[in-house]
Image 1 (cartoon, one colour):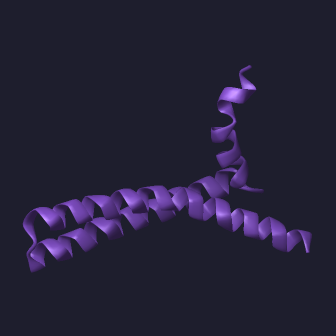
Image 2: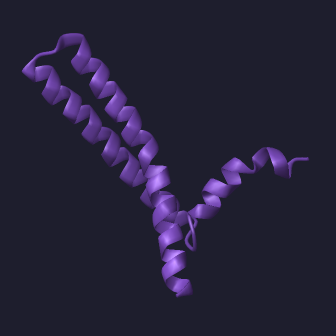
Image 3: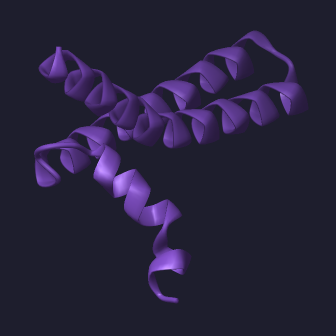
Length: 86
């Protein structure tokens, strides 16, 4: 049961890290498509979103490998930086 919980926390941490570049790519693609609104700009928007997803997956995997037990510690360290300095 504990291993399953740790794996779910790992997965949550991985998705949290991968989501940021994916959202940036999605916003960039949406902005590009809304500016030109052609079939080519739709394809370009999807490509920008895909690039964001690929960058997010690579980044999340690197963090997962570097912080081997739990990348969730990486997220906790980011959120608690100001509280640790007090």
